[in-house]
Length: 177
Image (cartoon, rainbow, N blue to C red; front, side):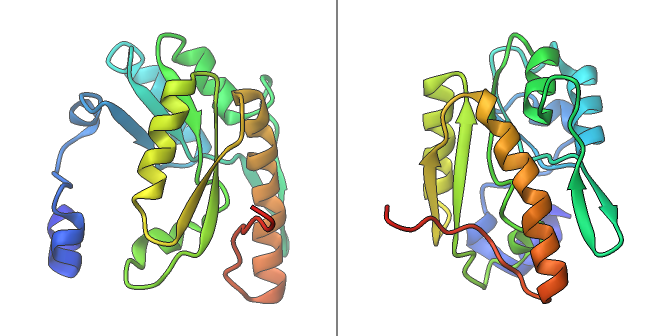
């Protein structure tokens, strides 16, 4: 996969190196770019290796019902909070819930989206926002504590439903800021 990305986008992905989940756990910032169930399983399996790391959750727990999506709330209110319970020695932050996943595969097209980052650790949240700001056309906003992740995760159901019903690729753009 890394070879395919390098062939397609060259220098834009030069810092990506191939590796497995154990290798990824050595990074200062680890992004869980998988669905909710896989994110939770990954956290269970790598909790020890992720101690002290910044762990970014992009997961939404959604269920498709016909031509709409509905949010499925886990016991702690959000997938991010579930991850924090599993990774209590890590710095869990959350972002990218409202950026369509396909956008990350289209580096030649502008994403034109705003990204809200939530997390209980100010330094971890700020580090994530710095990463977000390096992606062209994305703006980063501080969404406060991890308690607010539920809003981002559940609004993803609304945004996906809009995209399906209107046959668009809509994202979030905050006005007045």
